[in-house]
Length: 257
Image 1 (tube, rainbow, N blue to C red):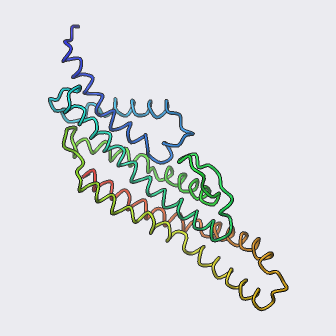
Image 2: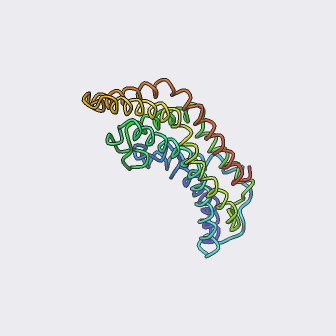
Image 3: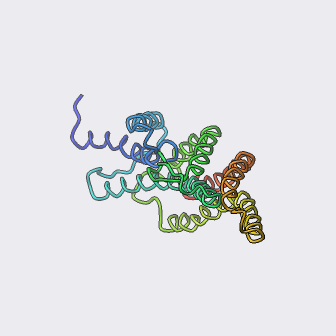
């Protein structure tokens, strides 16, 4: 079989541009983007998904892959995949923010560990919540839904120079406020109870200063916070599911699926 240089580049582009969009998703999607997931595994999954969906992708535009226009097409494919994963990362960031607020309110802000997903130090309470919502995300097939939406985006956002617009970016930026609002709502029940506990210790310390009530109240506050986390964990998962649903709705809006 004889191929000219242009025909060979066209064959490569047929696989390369869909692969860039799929692999960009696995570059930053929650759970799979963690350092504990080998890069070879993510690369293999991206290659496999691209190979499966290749027959269903609409015809590619007649653009030279090595030209300036071809480079812009590649940038668009990367932006689509990364932005989809970034929206889901903001959903998980609301849980980290919630865990940090809870840890600081109950006096465990100093107990930190490195989050394998983000590579930064977060309180242990936040890490407990992140592990719980990660298992929930996998249990409800959230990763499969994200892949399904991205594959469907090849029909709604065909491979080409025109893809995401400034309006799409502004929609994501405006929605980012939900990350802080959602994190506060998840932590608010536990923070409220711990606040009243600390207020009661403050009143007791004012009434009897010789008791050194804060020396006793510190371990009680920690124990109360842990018990509340254990009791209210189902409510946290329900709240996370609502934020996750809003995140997927935003992904649908951005990808026009």
